[in-house]
Image 1 (cartoon, rainbow, N blue to C red):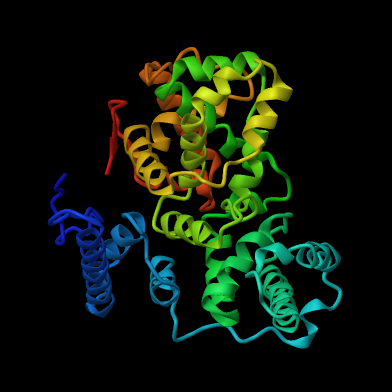
Image 2 (cartoon, rainbow, N blue to C red):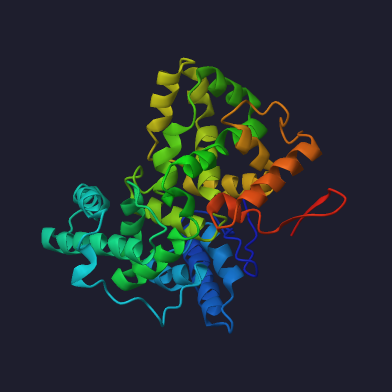
Length: 370
């Protein structure tokens, strides 16, 4: 079947000219080359064409290579590559309250390093990993370390190196990861509360099954706070998701959790309807997921049910089921009231707050989204 190649918008779709595996391989190479050309043109534009880079990161194949990621990832986070932080000094570990916990977590992270890496090389990287984490925390006392943070930091260290990793992780920690780095887990739980409303919009039957099982959302905690780095065994799959998340809204990781659950809908409904069975099933994330398909589906869900439409339901999750808002049927005044309360409560730029930056209620109680 022929598919039209959209070079101008970097859609990531490919056309197949001719039949046979040879023709398909040739077309794949051509598509990949064209995407790399588009990325490099965007990087060389003045100013840099960030929207094209975002589309490249989201579309099929992502950013393709680590060399491209080293150039594009900093741009997606607006990191100034000419003013990188210095390498941490020897005193970064002195009297640091999180040093012992960070040390334990990093020592246990051997599986996050490439198979076959020499022991000496891995140990050097582990020492750098400790220093990066402690340096970012020392420079940002408002941030609190959590177990799983190292799973995110090590990904950046392996791709972009020590100094760039410090700059990128510091930016990421003050934006995408900010809620995870509060003194308590309350904000993290609130982000998890978006999961069930998303499921309810797409598959009310599955949503009802999970409610009856009382499984909750804790099975997705490690997915969310590590950006899936802790639960996926293939580094290439982790990198593909990082391309996607870095180019997307801070809450996209919870939308991806939703599409994983939806992808396993038959398995879930076939299991015993009790907390232990469903939790065990969902906490064992498959390693052979159709990542490109799920990324596309997550983006569509985000576009159809943006956080602004789900915020009131997420806020009520800990108190009761959102019967007032099945498939976006909530009372307009009620949604507006909850959204306004959340706006008033938030003064910092955190993941589930970022969605409100373009939300502007007007005098006549209508809402507009840019």
